[in-house]
Image (cartoon, rainbow, N blue to C red; front, side, top):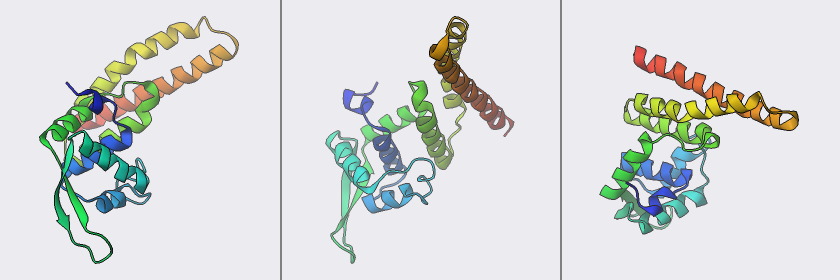
Length: 180
């Protein structure tokens, strides 16, 4: 069970928390990972100010803490940040939860898959949970599609095809993961 503060974390905050859970880091190191050419930036890019605000919020929520001040020849001392036990539990739980809304699948699911891959964790449970979450949505859209007209039909068709493509993607990825 997550606290109200944990449930309201933004995708950027979750991403920063998960990166800190991998190993203690300072904000500059996280910024490098989340730059356009960073290993995680190719999935979800987060601007430097957002990263530092995320670290402040995560600290306020008790999910991360400063463990050491490291001197720097390029400016002020850098704060080495590590996840707390609560932060590790929250991140582990979040990584296994499917995206709640269809509109969030593209961003949230890809971030989670990238993080799971970095950690060497099997993504199959997440993939199956996400498919299970989307199956009733797909059925409901299909049922409504036959009755819709005009732009309502266009919009429903767009949503149906988007969810259908996502389910096909999940099926393909599940098949590849199982084959390994």
